[in-house]
Picture: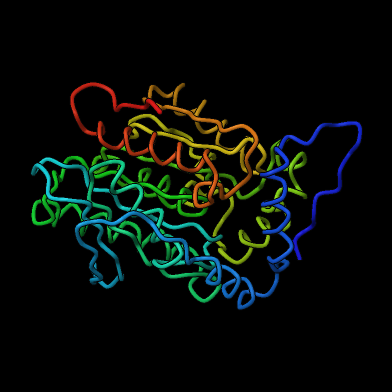
Length: 312
């Protein structure tokens, strides 16, 4: 099991009592790193949350990669198109686990969302997942008008490992992307940051889990298509929205990437949510709903003249 929180009577818990109860309940039911089948079963058992109704949902094949397309409602032909990459440490989760998140984002943004069922590690290590992500990006651009969207307003989005894949795909094909939305992404396989130490245990997503996910995923930790934070040059990338949980081993990687993007002249909006832990986007917490609304507003402005709207 994941390590439960051990209260330190000298340091106030940064999580509220309600969030702490949820965090500890989730950790108690989540397997330790090492058994991919147990982790996948645990992830599948928690994927039953219902999302909002949308006008249509359809499954299809995108250049050999399974995808699920969400159209929230009929709209103008210049709508944005979101390519969504799910989290799960590159080893678990899929279309069903992130169904509610994709529905919510589609409704909030007024955008068509294409959810990507990329190949998982360890059966398919790096670069299988980023190659699938790029394949779907190219497919989405090619079919954007048929989906009622503007091909120049394609946005990459993803949570956790999916946020890594979104960042990597933006690095590989910046000219094809109008924006990137990164929810608490892992960006450095070396895991060298203060937040890794501070939140290593007791906040559901442990440092031990993250290190194990990186090991399953493979690839050279120094390669920018594995660790985007180590890319030598971030100039010329599309605008970014980075959404982070304060109590998360990955927090400082996200902060570091936001700083580097801004220094490189990239339009980067940052939202740091206090008092929540990794994975809050898909949980019944006010912060998760607020983050999805804000991301929807940002996506709705992506690709238009001027800056994307980053208001909550």
